[in-house]
Image (cartoon, rainbow, N blue to C red; front, side, top):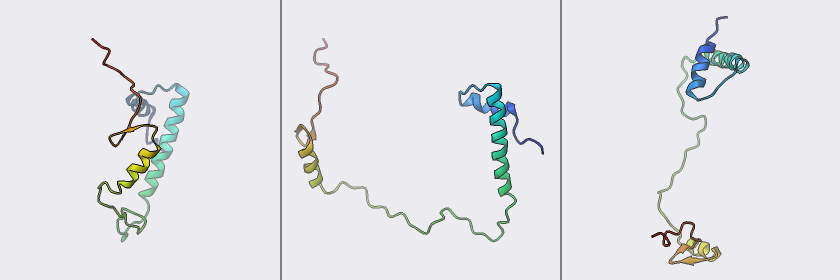
Length: 102
């Protein structure tokens, strides 16, 4: 059986991904990728005549809600658990203080 991918191609893809492969790794991944490509080629042999294309294997429909903020009562509960709050926001310690810069 002819190889579907060679070491030069694997080395090229590795260099694009900024990976360095030694000779053993190059041989290993060339074999692995060749087998993976072979599995996909097997799918070409499956008779799909009369089979409708599908985008989902489930009949479940994703129910979306409008993206709006609601239930502001939760904000009060959140702020009640915060160590400090001010004007409806959680107050946190200053990390970078630029007031001392001249």
